[in-house]
Amino acid sequence: MRLTDCHNFHDFRRLAQRRLPGPIFNYIDGAADDEVTYRQNAQSFESCDLVPNVLRGVSDIDMSTTVMGQKLDMPVYCSPTALQRLFHHRGEHAVAAAAAKYGTLFGVSSLGTVSLEEVRKTYDNPQVYQFYFHKDRGLNRAMMERAKEAGVNIMMLTVDSITGGNRERDKRTGFSIPFRLTLGGMIQFAIKPAWGLNYLFHEPFSLPQLDAHIDMGGDALSISRYFTDMLDPAMTWDDVAEMVQLWDGEFCLKGVMSVEDARKAVEIGCTGIVLSNHGGRQLDGSRAAFDQLKEIMDAVGGQIDVLMDGGVQRGTHVLKALSLGAKAVGVGRYYLYPLAAAGQNGVERALELMKVEIERDMRLMGCKSVEELSPDNLRFR
Image (cartoon, rainbow, N blue to C red):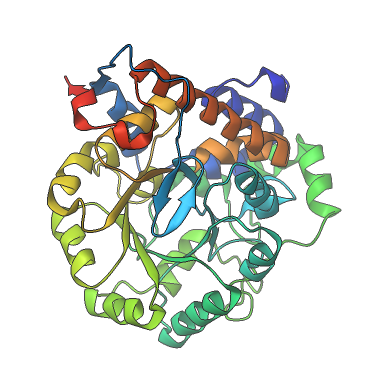
């Protein structure tokens, strides 16, 4: 199977599975507990039908959108995700370059493997810095100041990860940073030697956003232990309000799901929220973001930019979310599988397929621009 044989999300996933050692593939592919929410994220779009209009003169399509002051050429952005250089040695560079080519938003994670300064200096597309709230308040302030100095456009605080989700696939393989694998996990690495050679003969793996503050190498500080030991479950709205004031710019909360929390985000001065259940990787059994979107838009639509992520695999999924009022839609696994499969070329192919699907689907919907999409275009079963 080659990259040119990949025509959708599932094709990229299969190619990534062939190329990655089992523990790393399962880190991307897995979710919390029984993975019910993970499956529901994609299935949520299936209970919603599109109602197209015809004869609308749709020779020219404008799919651009503006998100928290940033103009995007397409209404899909690459959500910040951790550990990207484990999946391909170019990591964030590959994703940022692809996102820049398609004129869309890209995010660097606190657990990113390339420094936010390097990415900001190299690529000129809109960029977001996603970070977690640590017990060390000084560390939080230092990370925000660093992002400000780097010229990051949007600060994105993840609020649904004050402790780690129960990711049982990682427990079975022993996946951690640095690697402390089970015997079965080590065998999986042994049968994928190409990945190992790339890992060994390129720039050493690091977490530059955290390396100056946290020792990730002394023992097996697993990702779940980072969440459990370093992040602060005592975080409150007062803490976030203080950060919003300190940042004094575009500030977004990722992981908001309830109407009450959406209203609170507006109240403390946030300029955006991302409806998200962390790809089903945190609280299993939680609601899909798409299922919650109408309720949130009814409450705060027009007061704050609302984005969503989770389960987005098709252009039609994007149009359904936009029809309900989302400004843009984030993707994670949708670009991580192609990153693992083929680096920058893979991410570019995935974004190109998405762009083509959205353009074609907008024509078939009878919409020349995303502003023309509305709830009138939808029916729920």
